[in-house]
Length: 100
Image 1: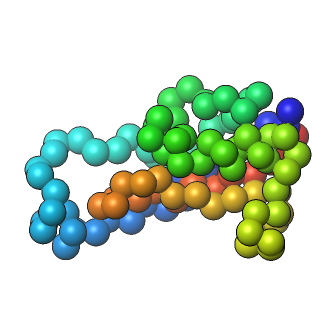
Image 2: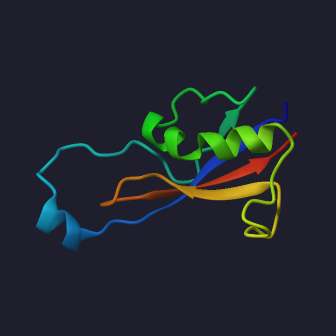
């Protein structure tokens, strides 16, 4: 299987939605923009948010197996994917890239 580099690229924060709908919480996300994780054998890298992994797992596994070209040409690099976690208040976008 190919190794996949997973990099948090951007975090958006929707303060208006937080103010209107979210109960106050002290801590929401530990992802560091620019940190690199390596997915080996299609497995979740240590330290990567489990909820984010659940959003990207099928893409990471498909890339690890040599697949790609999701949605008929969605990405300029067909051996990559841009996936966001499912936090509707502060989603993080992750770039998945085949590195080996």
